[in-house]
Amino acid sequence: MSTIRLTMAQALLRYLDAQYVEIDGEERKFVTGVMGIFGHGNVTGIGEALERSRGSLDFIQGKNEQGMAHAAAAYAKQNSRLAIYACTSSIGPGALNMVTAAATATVNRIPLLLLPGDIFADRQPDPVLQQIEHPMDYTISANDAFKPVSRYWDRITRPEQLMSAMTQAMRVLTDPADTGAVTIALPQDVQAEAYDYPEAFFRKRVHSIDRRPPAAPALARAVKLIAGKKRPVIIAGGGVHYALAAAELQRFAERFGIPVMETQAGKSVLPWNHPLNLGAAGVTGTLAANRTLAEADLVLAVGTRLSDFTTASKTAFANPNAELLSINVAALDVHKLDGTPLLADAKLALEGLSEQLALLDYRTGHDGAELAARKAAWDAEVDRLYALESADGLTQTRALGVINDFISKDDVIVCAAGSLPGDLHRLWRPGKPQTYHMEYGFSCMGYEVAGSFGAKLARDKGEVYTIIGDGSFLMMHSELVTSLQEKQKITVLLFDNHGFQCIHNLQRGHGSDGFGNEFRYKEAGVLGGDALPIDFRMLAASLGCAAFSATDAASLRTALEQAAAVDRSALVHISVLPGTNTDGYESWWRVDGAEVSVSAKVAETAKANAQIRSTARPI
Image (cartoon, rainbow, N blue to C red; front, side, top):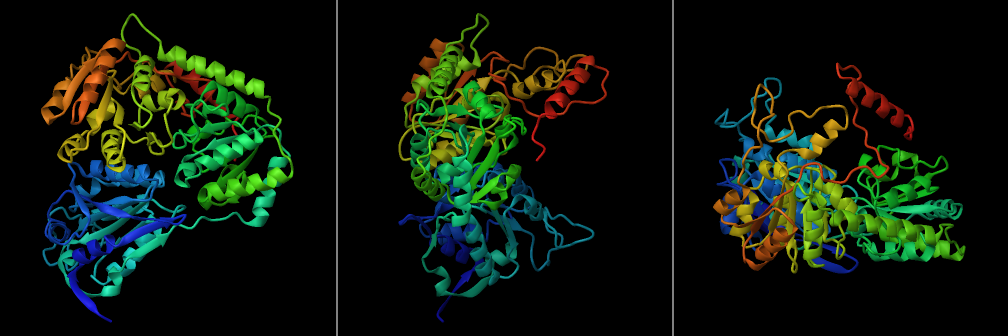
């Protein structure tokens, strides 16, 4: 067998450069490149390999390890998990900065390859700078923190281990059911160590993403269940997007007259104005969707994790006769809530169900006029909120209305945390599928700017808009600089309401007078003074961005036009009134209050929540 002598790091990059994926006969390169920040754990190993031996792999310099890993995850998400960037860091704090991003990717089932540097395998300079000396287990390093948030974890202590490790890494990264963060810890001495690798290790590999067909008995059980129901509904999750099954879901819904509701990850599966699209489901759902869901006798959950936001903490399926049919490629998800499982690819499952239900001449018993009236009423509510004015300033929903009207159908919006995801889920009218990019599995503050950069890397047309609150922006905006460096324009729309107002609202809704969530000067031991005068526009300009501001609908429209006209990343600072987000619409989310408190309001709220909790599904 012919061999080639390479360092482990050089071999790793050559291997990654030869990886491809194929689905439905279409082949594409899987690893686009590497994002990195160098330090003493990786600069002379994988850093040298990237400088001199990276092949066709792109390299992007990150500014914060968490930020660049969020960008890589967003790139994979926007590419329907069919292309990735890897991320490399130094040891210690550089590596640990990526742990949050690893959890975010794993929770959202997004492939993310992390290549953190590690302590010396030979232990010669023991202890090395940034080494964690665990007194009971000396093999532990900072990288062990990745284990609970990774779908696969390995440490390369000998250069030849790379071959088996990367085989397992690619298995997870290309698995539609079991993907997430993959962490390959790279001791800095082993990165630079040479080995005679078989040339066959570097051959082009095409990883086929084979669609899992439904088993015949399971399909028959599902057909029987649906056929006996009159008021079924569909909850469409992100798995519909990743299975490239939006068209199949639309045909299925239309053929049998089944209304569709969307999770945060599933939003934009159907056109917002489609007559069967009742909008968002659950805690951040529409009134049309939540009322219809409460009456449903069957819930077809397609490609969704069925999180507590989707199920309203298991209170959304209020019909005592309601049953659940879960269609998912992941066994972990398909058995949730004691439903009937249909373990299969979403596209093949919907096609199989459609074919067999058609033989039965199945049609739901939904009243079309009633569904149309509910949808029309909700559309009118969105129009009202989008036009909502206040003499005190710009409302959050009015600002979103101006933005929704301004951007084109090819533009992508990116969001993740705060009160904005709820408003966007309920109100936003996407132009096309996959133009609504929401990270809400982990609701990770700080994802938004970095995620926008990653989404922009994945788009060949249209603009990318970051919709973000001031609290999340302060947590992380470092990759704004990377967007400028890479000449990948993003537009940050910063909603400034002076604090963590989403949690402030949640807090006050459970009996608090408001504590510790607004950005105010401390006076008499509490944060009760004037609002902090943070100049976000100047901050953005100092980084090199174009910067604009808006205080009302007219100035917001002007600022959007100005931002669209520049050729570099821009920020629009939008002053909005706190507490002008949407809420309610016959949904509930479990947040337990104190059982004992000196506040009567707290005790009263806890009692009310306990009463609602008693109506939730027990399983």
